[in-house]
Length: 186
Image 1 (cartoon, rainbow, N blue to C red):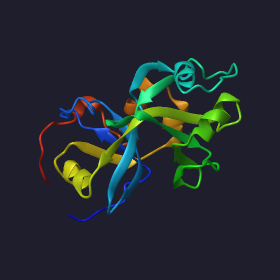
Image 2 (image 1 turned 90 degrees about the vertical axis):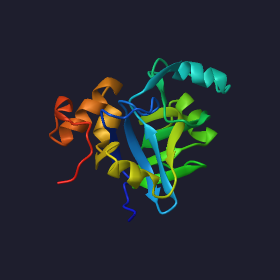
Image 3 (image 1 turned 30 degrees about the vertical axis):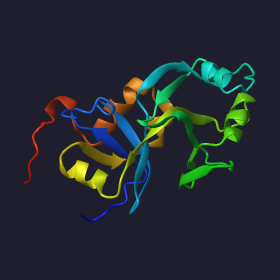
Image 4 (image 1 turned 90 degrees about the horizontal axis):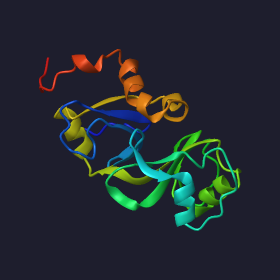
């Protein structure tokens, strides 16, 4: 199967997605190449606030507007590790550059900067990520598990979590209720 580069795309879970980790999710693909794919789910908040997270990692948090914000379930891989999806990309110790203005960072220095109000203005923190082996994502797409569409950073960073999936569907001009769960080819 030919590999396509879906970096910077949204993966929209189809209504027939039975996997409880991915049912009704919107995933942002941070990297996709011949070694596989990596993404973070951006519409599944967990019962952990940024204030709670910063206390757990022992980083003093100055009062800030984000302390009540949710942390997200990013996917079932390395769920004990934090991933910060942010713009602008900036320069941090461990960042995967997704585009010229977006990065995914796993190093503590970004958390320390955020705690002081010096980090990126727009970010989402997830615990865990979604990963696919070589060819796995392409196979899942061919099996009608996912739709892919160009991602909008405004959807990620400017909309509340519960509006992100419907907004991604709208970019395709699709009404969620009209999607079929059947696999087929024209």
